[in-house]
Image 1 (cartoon, rainbow, N blue to C red):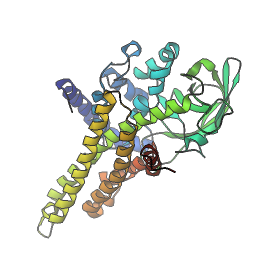
Image 2: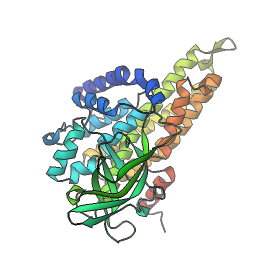
Image 3: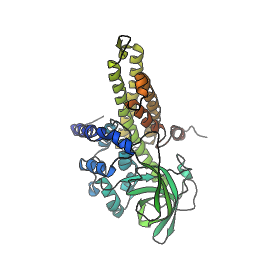
Image 4: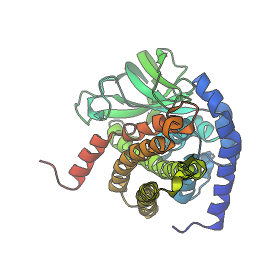
Length: 381
């Protein structure tokens, strides 16, 4: 990859931030079940982490995509997955459609504060009966004069307990399936909106995740992102960027986990010698490292294609499948090679296993990714 000295400098800044401002607080945030996102995003915005590729007119950095690659990779070095996921929502999941299709007024009111770290954003697509099958969503927005009246529910919504606004995908016409959906900015102080519960998750425990309810929730029709009825298409493009972020971050996270495991095995003496002297362990770690390297460089091919203006759906889909399966495998071997201590909650391996398990589910399950790939490659009847 053509990383420059400027990219390398940015990498050092991000790594220092993760090591000094994130990792020391992980235990407290996990105990609280939440991170102070407004404070953190403000600090990150001041350092130029948010809105890297967005237009400077609204507070973006106007940088190239490799800066996003660096940011995602370095947040993969955090001691938990919650912060990388929360930041990913802010920079690559809830805001891309607004940046690309939103009106100037909508950008000024919601995008600019999000890029400044003054507002927390969330993406609201998943519903109790519609996860990977986005065409099955039921949340509906009906027009009443100059307002949308929204009814329905959303669940598994990251950042939602702290969010100032949501990018909501809702049905705005009677067309079924993939048609007739729109993306709408919904401020969380809108009458009729409520976070009905904070969900208790297996992993990502420092990330607030909510069940949302819309009961005659009213917002201006002017809050529609892009063209009415184009929400599904816009959201699919947003999903691709979400998956790219997750893939970039996963590669670094897995690489670091293998390195940490090797460091432990150098110190762990069994039968009079370090465990790392076992040829079986050496070969297994080398094999896993090779797989992670393949993922990392496939990610770079994806990034290059993205910068060239090509459709990266296939790249992002394949990398997501690879990252999901490899995350499970690496996490399992890290616990195994740590032995009993790896099974303890106060060892990093336990949190790593819990957090990385989401990789194969969130942002599109492995099975959904295979379905997408089958369609792209013509293996579909």
